[in-house]
Length: 162
Image 1 (cartoon, rainbow, N blue to C red):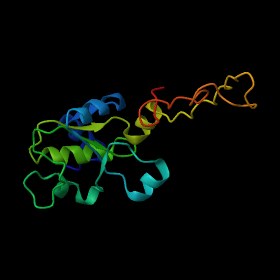
Image 2: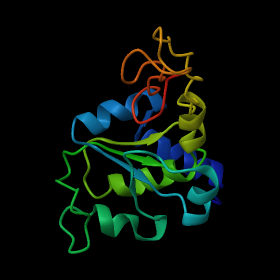
Image 3: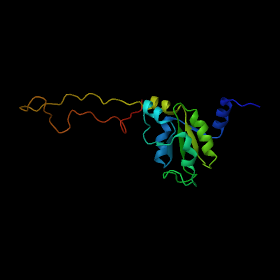
Image 4: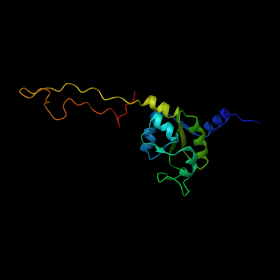
């Protein structure tokens, strides 16, 4: 019997968890790993994923093998939560199912991949600074207090939820 790529994908997704972009922060806060498997050229064109460890797909199993000599220093064991991220959420499903075979109790991929994360957490340019209040007798444009009129940084690390 011949199996299609779609069938492999469906089977893989039955063996893993799938998380949304809004869940990545909690995984990282709990000591989990977010692993970006996109090739360098794709990361360069699409952008980097803050907080993610970059491991290209061809060495993924070796870097996440908790008992292997080539594992990442961030790997603490099979009880650690791991989320695999690709560009659109297909290759990451297949990769996560393979990593699950290493014994991880909680392995997931990101639904929609980096593209979904980017749509969820779009960069927001800082607002234009408000005109600074002037002090009577001060030169034009002088602010009344240090930092007055400066815009606050948008969200955490420059990212704000849409």
